[in-house]
Image (cartoon, rainbow, N blue to C red; front, top):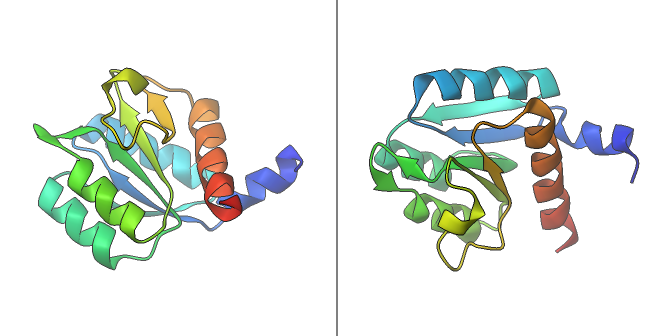
Length: 130
């Protein structure tokens, strides 16, 4: 699949954002809007994120691994139960991700716009070919 076709995957895609750091959340939103995505959220608390993960319509989720001191895994489980792709966002890299989620894509903070775009595209494509 060409890059142009891959980029189209993000155009109009609804992306659930779970991030408790306001500056990072705003940066993520700006990047996603640049990609043509619609932002769902952002959620800055685990309870809000869990409710959104269970009820909102979205194509992919970006989940901060640690939200206000709480691990994100209940939200990740809700996303996976719905058969939707997710991307973890963390300052600790993939080594900090718990099983059974170690095979999921990770963007390590700080990440570039290109890194985020590539990771989101791969997550969505991986979900549609699985």
